[in-house]
Image (cartoon, rainbow, N blue to C red; front, top):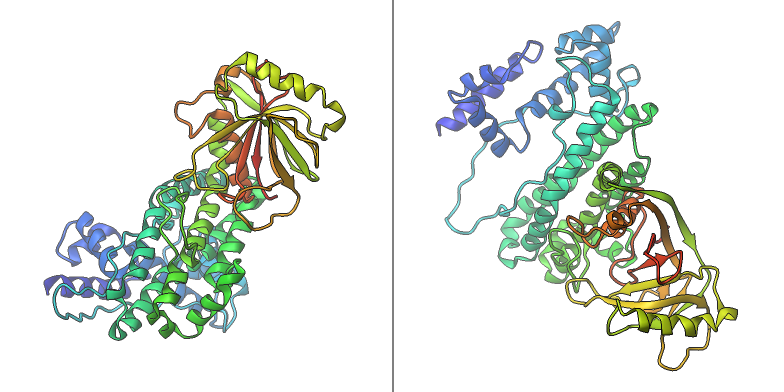
Length: 491
């Protein structure tokens, strides 16, 4: 039990020295271990980093001090080891949600000293889920309170870097969360109280706290013009989900019941709706049940996409650039074309468009030659890719013999596959045509990736997989290279 005594001694040392300078090496000596081992042990046992713990305690006590008569913000800032009033105010606002000058009784957010207790039971049956850690913001890495203050651009770049790393780690942890919720052996009556702590405080509560701090930090950076405004919409939606107000109408009653009385989680049917199914590291695997955890996974992704996708889009434009980008809401249309046995066969393509040229009276408001692509409403992991040469024509256009058609309508009917939605993003490109069509390092090719990533950065929904479709556009005709791209999007 030496490690318990060591950590307890360290916490007592921190509590006695919150108004003094604290450094990791000194804290590690209190625990009789190395700095790296101490930080790892503290995080594993306490669930937060030692830096977070110190900052949370200082902010709690600072608020109480500011409520005292005649207290001055600068004095309190120096007392809790902040070099400037500005750096103190930023940290205070992120923690409490209001600046130091506006703190009032009833608005104080308290983080109390931690204590360690041990409860050991029989072997093998474990009540804590075997999950990885969500990659949440470490504000020690974002802030630089001790050194030269960071510029808004530098701080935002650090948030962008965090978002990219979180996107690589968090999807797998959400899938592990789904797996744990569906594991009947983890949901006995004696496990319910601990599981409530794990899910409601350990997962939902920590994401809510992160969102509050992230929003405050981004609001602080917003006047500098570096923040992608779409991130605030993504945070709003994530907060709604975390507060038990899912956007999916079919889940609202189930989630509300879980928030009101966690004992409903003993029912397998409830847990299936909460957990959903695992959707894989990119979130695109096909599932039978899309549950509450799946929506949380998507919301987490949308926050991160809004942060790092604009930078990604800039980096991906090597040798070409986006000439124009807009979201279009078109009336009902009908695609008419053919799925050629050889998509590159120029003679077949020539004959196809000769037929369509003769139907000029049926042209829609988007009459370019296109290569229309989709998976018939199925996920890319189960539905094969299909490509069709043709054009978007007016609704109800007669279909020539030997041709096929797909209808497009303005309103989503909620069913997988055709009719598709006539809302989409349209990007046009200029520059090196070969670079636009480059495939190496891209999910499909450069035009596909850049168009999709702009949409994700804008926080606009791609109706994947049910109504997902894309199209390469040949602005100068079918016999010239494609220089534009369409992507289904519900703007």
